[in-house]
Image 1 (cartoon, rainbow, N blue to C red):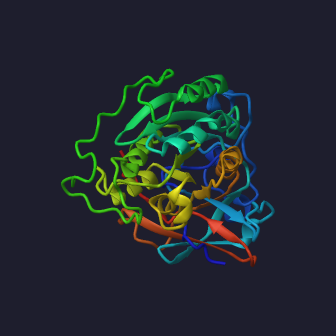
Image 2: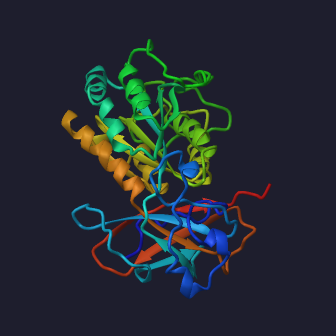
Length: 358
């Protein structure tokens, strides 16, 4: 089966969580059986032993989520059931792992929801904390016309819960818990005023507000860019998908920021996003970054969707290869993952940007 969204590869400067970091390149036959080296508490800031990605310049790492026909995660696939192509050229899979990785996550909350929707989201916000483990670090932000940080990255679940309890969506008077930074400056192009050099969004929802999803995701990507490369980087965005016609950052700029920072978007769609499934900007960002999109029809759906997003982000197959036969001078490379077993679907990013050596 061919991945419907082609694939991702995490940036080429990422690397393995394994003995490869000590021993250097292994012969192909041995690389498949390489066992992960448990991270130290200093690696993760926790006693929880999870897989760690360590630096090796030439290795491209590809996280892939596989589901069966009922939408359940498939966890029994082997390395020889996958094929990977970069720019249409088949690559040799030199690394394969099913180990979970710790997360660096930004929870991004829509501050421009309808009042009724805001109320039902507020009732479930604390449940977001349950989607993350003690080895994860989580930041919280809110957005309307611009992004405002609520909580800087915290591994302490108590701080996360306190921050979520302090969020009052739809009310600009809210508490900020140890954010460490102030609000991002308001965009000079609020509403539908055209920003110089910007292009219209493809979002089918008529925009009559000042909400900027492109800009909020761009800002969240910049925050995640600085986090450790030994973690999976994700954004969990809770929104109705309405996006002002002109953001400061174009959709293309935002997508490049997400892919070059190795960020996957997991979107929880509300209200009109449910009516326009698969056609909103939320869907586009989720699909092209290798994340997923979920739809909440009822308030009671939200806690389960928070948990599902965290579970999918953490439990992915990790495929690694050293690029061969492609033009290394190109800044962007497409990736396609195929799977031999029928009846399964893949979630994977469309490609990756090469980060120039410093």
